[in-house]
Image (cartoon, rainbow, N blue to C red):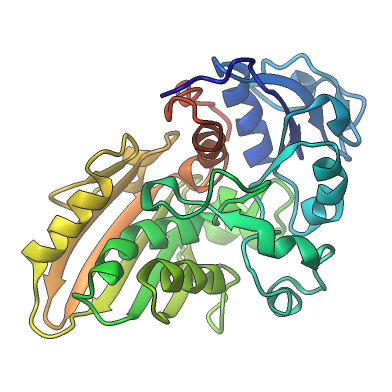
Length: 341
């Protein structure tokens, strides 16, 4: 894999949230990129290592990034904050990688429904590329790299090879479980230990904001309209995503044939692994790895996938996308595991 001639200068916007702080930790040790700026509106003026437990970053947090000195901006801000600033970043020539939801959906009319307000830069949506490197979803040419959400990443990786094969019907039911860190550092009462300990809580049953991006990506990958039903659940663990996906067979069950499709899709991937039995989320914790298990039950293919919501579901995925977009070693900078949260 070719390395960039000069290590690009990278800035992280929203560098004190869970995903942003994890990004900072990874980029500090990236062999082919330079972390030169970090921003946080709530912590501006402080040194990063003073604002985030476990950080070894001595950069001072600014209220905004100065994109004129950056080749790459990675945003881990709250929903629709990056979109409001992306035009300025792009005008300076920076590549924008967004960990949040700002560029995942192509249709601007979907944002008021799922995110509660109009999209700040609807004209940029069509040039954004929702990116999953293993499935060749996305482009190395675009100026905006959009990353799927944690649930969406797991569901897309779990079901796309089956749906592309035509061996299942274009329909998927996705049952999702997530750790509490997915709610971020500013989570409210519903996420307190005393509220969630010894409990499992389904939520967003009428519809979760990751559902339309799952449906959009799977429909594009399989070249047919895919119907997705998705219900997430909060479980009392800090990190982790587990999805169990149910896909009706098209005709007779063909588990061996569909397994071949998964081996073709992921056989060369350093980060996606097919396993012979379901595995716990802990196996993927603090990594960029996804573990997928397939089986058949009656008229349905059943696929389980586990990953780390802050790892492959957010920060580590952003570093993987940076490497993919710039033609770097896929595993560059994806090594040391941050210990917080």
